[in-house]
Structure formats: structure tokens, C-alpha cells
Amino acid sequence: MRRPPCDCSLGSQTTPPMQPFDPQAFEKTLGGKPIRLYTLRSKDLTVTVHNYGCVIVQLLFKGKDLVLGYDTIDKYITSEEKYFSAVVGPVCNRICPPTATIDGQVHTFKDHLMILHGDALLTCHVWDVVESSAEHVTMRTSFTNALNFPGKVDYEVKFSVAGSVFRLEINAVSDKATILNCTSHPYFNFGDANILNHTLQINAEQYLEVDDNCVSCRYAPVKGTPFDFTAPKKIGQDLDLSNEQLRIGVGYDHNMCVTPNTEQVVLSYADVTMRITSNQPGIQFYNGGCLTTKDKCHQGKYGVTYGPKQGVCLETQHYPNTCNEPTFPQIHVKAGDKYVNWTEFAFE
Image (cartoon, rainbow, N blue to C red):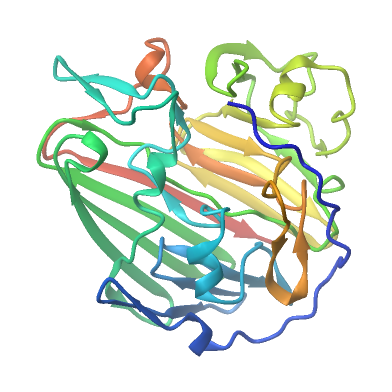
């Protein structure tokens, strides 16, 4: 399944002026549940989230907003780009074909070629806020046998700030054996018209090649390819090279095989550096090659129109399509076992 052609121009503002959000523009009741903003502050960071899809609306550091997004809740609800800085699951990324064998039983999740990001189950949903303070907020929800993923699954997302570190933790427990692979989907841009001049380092010796449907299918070494970010280089440095994997992904849209519980990624531009540490074995590196809809661009915050390659996603997760690739680390979770994905973003 190819993405639509990317025909929107890149945004023109390099450092959009910081304008305060109107809290009322994010207040809404949907399905009988209230939606509102929650702002976390530390000495160095200000992070604003809302409880529709556990979205990161704003991440302020050194006077810059480092994530793309919208300025009203209605845009998040109606946009074709559902996953802007939202939590996705029960299983993020692609499962193709959309089936899995769990405890000896075959489960089909969608009558289609594939299922992407859990069909927005956790994203297009109002979460319950159960605890909040000046430095953290906790949101919860649950689903039972949703999309034919077995079990009653209780989900919890925790956001917190301390000093210059933003931490995001996704927890889940199911009452039946199931599969889980959740993540968060922020688009980062540290202040340029696009992310091509951002410097990136990924501590990965291997990545996963994709087929013509952009589905991960096999291991490949990064050495000698455009996917070698073991030494820092600009994201755009090799994008114009003739490479079949770059063609399929409209640039980079690939899982990088990293080591859990280590510093996995360093992203820098101008005077901002971000270091990512996570307990996950994979990073989905997406350069926003098709950050557009078929007929219009995204009108984002601060009057900026978003176009291709204006944001980069670095999503901590298990490998995509593990249900169909037995050599990949598996995502089966036993009844009663706790699933945890934690990620720390350290800024300097």
C-alpha cells in the first residue's frame, strides 16, 4: 500500500513565534468524557498534553516548540493525520497480513491488506486522567477484545518532566494472552523549515528492510548504505542517492535495530540536542516524507503549513510485523504480565 504523492511545499517559517494556546480551544466533551490541556513544568521544560489520544501538544525548550501539532482540539479530531504526537496501539506500525496466532488460535484484526497503528484504537479516544500535578500526569483507559485483540487490556500512560528530561511511559496489563507493542508518535523539528539539516545519530548496526507495502520483512546491515547513522550526519545527506529502500519509504520509514536500556538516538539542530533512551529494541525512523494528505497540507500551530519532511519521528517500539516474522523479537504478553514501554528524552 503506497502512500499518496507528496505534492505540498515545505513550510516557510523557520522559527515560528511562540503564541500561548487558548485553553478553551482544547476543551470539549466527546462521548460524555471531557477533554482538556495539562501543562507540566520543570526548570528547563514545559510540556503540554491533552487526553484525546494522549497527545503531546507542545514541548518547549530554550524558547522553542520542538514538536509539530495543532492549535485546537477539533483539528486533532478531524485531521486525516490522526497520529500527530499521539499514543498508538495495541500494536503500532504495520501487521501484514493483519493476523496473529495467540495461544494456538488465529486472530484476524482487519479485513484488509494490513492494519496500521492499531487502527487508531488508542489514538482516536478520550482517556481518563487519574492523577496530575505540576510535573506529571497519568491517563488510563481499557478495551475488551477490541479489533479482535484478545483480552480486557488496561492501559496507562504517564508523562513527567524533571530538569531537562521528559519521560513517557506506556503500561498495559491484559487478563488474557495477547500481543502489545505501543508507542508515541511525535514529529520533531528544532526550528528549521524542514528536518533535512538536523544532525542524527542512531546507535544501530542493523535495520529492517521493507517490501513494496512498506512492511518490515528482513534484517539488513546499515554499513555501506544510506541507513548508516552510527556516526552523526544530516538527515538529508543521503536522501538523493539511488536506493530501492529510500524509494519505497519516500526516504526513511524504517525500523532501526537498537539496544534496549541504552542511549539510542541523538538528534541536534542549532542550539538544541535531544538524546533518547528507551527499554525498546527498535526505533521507527520516519522522515515525514509524506506528511500531507491527498488534497491539502496540514495547517499546524503558529500559522505554519506542514509539508513533507518538516518533522522527524523516532518512535521507540518493538519491531513491526513480528506476528509474521518469527526471527523478530516477539510481542506476546501473558495474562497478568505487565507490558512496559518507557522512553526518556533528555535535552541540552
